Every structure is written in C-alpha cells, then in structure tokens.
Length: 257
Image (tube, rainbow, N blue to C red):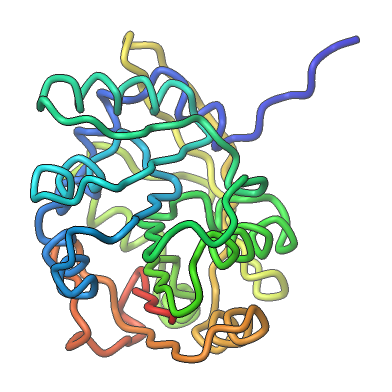
C-alpha cells in the first residue's frame, strides 16, 4: 500500500532548517521576545509551550533570557533536529519534540502558549483542522492562561494585491510566489512557490493558506472559552499592543486570555 502524499507544508520543511533561518520573516525573534516577556510579566517561572516552534528561535531566545520551563513542538522532525542543534550550540537545554499541533498530549500544563509566524495554524487544509489547533492550544493552558499567536490577516487580500506585495518583498527573500489566487468564498490563497532546501535541491510546491477576518478569530476564541481577546497588527520584530490592526497589515497579532 502506498503512503499518503505529503501536504505542501510537510514537504516544504523537510531538510529546510538552515534555509528557514535565513528567511527575512525569521529575523525578528529578539524584538518579538521582548513583547512576549512583557506579556509574561517577566515571570521566568512561567511554563511556556511554543507550538510550531520551527528551528526554535523564540524558545532559544527566551531560554537565554532565563525562561527555563519551555516545551517546543513542531510537525517537522527536520525542524526539530535543527532546533536541538542550535540549542546545543547556544548551550541551552530545551524540551523540543516532534508533534502534530492537531493532536497534542497536553492538558492544563502551561501558563503561556505561543504560536508565531503561522506556527501550524492557518496552514492546514481544512478549517476544522485549524480549529483543532486552537482547541489544543486552549486545552494546553491552565485556567487563566494566555495564548499569543499570529495569523494571516484576511483584510489584507481584500484591500490589497498580494502579488504586488510579494513582488515588493522579492528583493528581500529572493523568491515570489506565482499563480496566486485568493478565493473570496473560502478566504484561501493558493500559490505556487519554489524553494531550495539545505542541500541545494529545488522544490516546487502548491500552497494553500487560510486567511482569517479579525471577527472570525474573535468568534473562534470565544467559542473556545477565551474571555479577553485583543487583536493588533503584527509588525515583524516589533510586536506591540500599540499597533492598531489595519488592512495594510499582512498578519495580525492575537492575545487571548
């Protein structure tokens, strides 16, 4: 019996750790961790879960700042291997695990859950799978815990040309998705991307990402029992409650308690 074909997000992150760390959108970890610290009240005893941790950039930075109760999970074993390698090089110990955000084992174990840079959420092929990730994040939190995540801002493709935006970023990351199409009925953007892995092999992938209207996110989180929900514009490396969400923001920053 043949195995199931890999989803695009599984194929993308195979043998892609070093290349991932070079991407322009991964360069803001220090500033983003400044925001996480403020939201954590600088309480280094907090238990933190990093969902979709990738190569561990936020978990490693926070651990270096004294937060030692961090678990990082990611679907990609390759990304987790790179995270462990980086942590070893930095001389820090972090519990990194390969795990599916749609099926997490945690039950009321963390004070803070972070899920940044589309860490699993919004990449899944169905809305139900994306909702399951939010539900698992909720289940991982203690009563009164906090969830911080970023996701794609559905206002952006309605009011702006995603293709023009990507072309403007081409000089930064050397790539621009092609054949893009935004579906107003499903709020999904499909595109064809070409990436080069850590061994120099080229991969062409058909992507599909779910963009969310702010009101959708608020409704989903209220459905899961979150009482206080704040949504702001997500600025790379400069997360802040001062940034009002606008249609010019590619991503939104969500803080739910």
